[in-house]
Image (cartoon, rainbow, N blue to C red):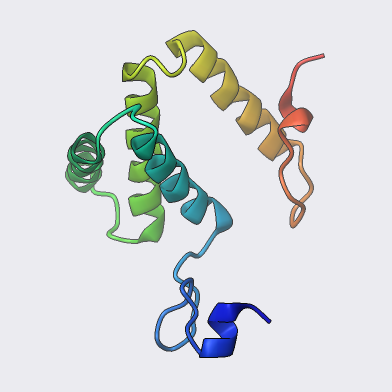
Length: 121
């Protein structure tokens, strides 16, 4: 049992004990954004400004106000900041996004997605 469970506090659950994140990647995109901000690739202000821009764009496009829209906006904001910050050249980032897309499509439902399933031979 984790220290959090033993104390009755679960940092990844709401007060009614339902999970905060619907999908693991929701937590991962926010953790990655936090890690990259802490490493100096972009500032927390740049993150919040870019995320806000993506959320406003989603609202203008008529996207629903739900978790999928929020985390889609977070992912797009993260991709923009990584590309702008010189973390990866745009073609390399595009190639990696495509590899993850192929990996997702090549992964049986319910199984963890492995990047190797999307890499070209």
